[in-house]
Image (cartoon, rainbow, N blue to C red):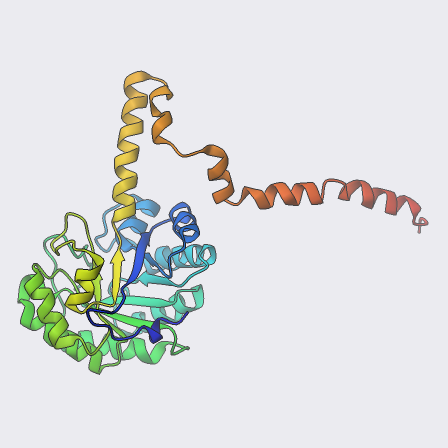
Length: 302
């Protein structure tokens, strides 16, 4: 599978659905579900790994190690959030090379000031357009394989307006970005305008339940001109609701009897986590020490 080969689609086209993953468990579950690509969400990964807001608090080292873990668990391509590239141009080069070496299939870079903030929260500021374009140029030059895709995101819409966001998107495309990500359009009309004016380059839509951008059907996103849809928050929001329920029941009832309809099958979960390999390995090697012991007995002493 090569994301570079994703076609420019219209109303009769298709949409690449990329669920958000944020740790080993979510990656394993999404992987076995059979998606064509996964998205390593910054919000979810920072929250899961460090328990802090997605506000520029995680380091490059924090994130590249998560890339390595999740890409190693996934059978399909992993698109990875790299925030601002963790600094200036040299940092962007280092980040692109590191993410690619760690197993990512695509890297997402944005034009926010450092420290950045989640794209559907207030208080985001962007760097000057010339600095943002320079980062994309460096990212394109830094990759080893042309199949490693550069996703260029602009957060300009919220403070500077849609026109500036589209201007930046075009500049990113001219700089060599493979996919454009205009963050937080606030209506279908704005999304359609993005599709009309930037639709010659593959477009990504960020679907955040409760966020600024309309949550629509797959077909509607296609009609508006999008080829890729990421769902970064869906899984961790679902997980949060489930945990709030079972922890609340456990605190109230002081047992887990009322939780049985809200938990997955333990044996099936063991299979998801890879225990079948452990069981088969133990069975295959159950007698190996005895065999070695007998072999050593037969050898003459030196």
